[in-house]
Length: 178
Ligand code: FES
Image (cartoon, rainbow, N blue to C red; front, side, top):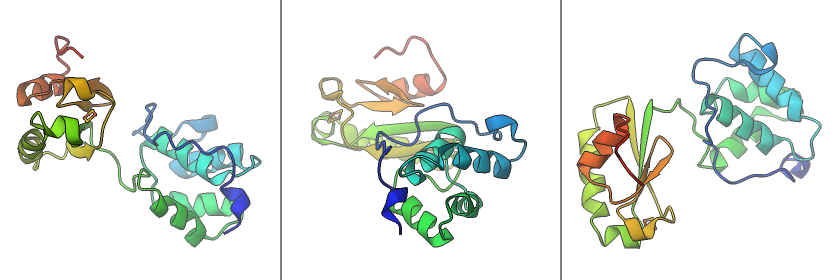
């Protein structure tokens, strides 16, 4: 792979940073996802190291990188599909499937483990195992160690989590505090 497609402009701060458009692209007035992806890729194509910024932009817009996006991006950057796919699969933060409507991320790091994160994670995973609208995943330290068990619900940082507080947060209950 040509290294110039990866240099510069790299932001490893996470790929799902809000602004997700799960219903379809609107970039540059494009009407289909393919057109929107092409427009996004062309916006960044002249940057130094455009591939990662493009993938981040797609992830921000749609929440994931679809298989059909890969040849479009490859074509704009004059790369092979394998080169683009290699980068997508190398960085585990890039989702390959649409995100669930709600996302619960529970901390499994040491400080949270010491106050019950293990059991909370197990019961939460079991609770939502058959719910395609809720995705439960683990993270390792959210910087909220003093308020463990810590976690995030739809991107919102929460502490002192219990099953009940998680349910409230999912329901959008305003009384759930930090
Ligand atoms: S250990 Fe859980 S937030 Fe730091």
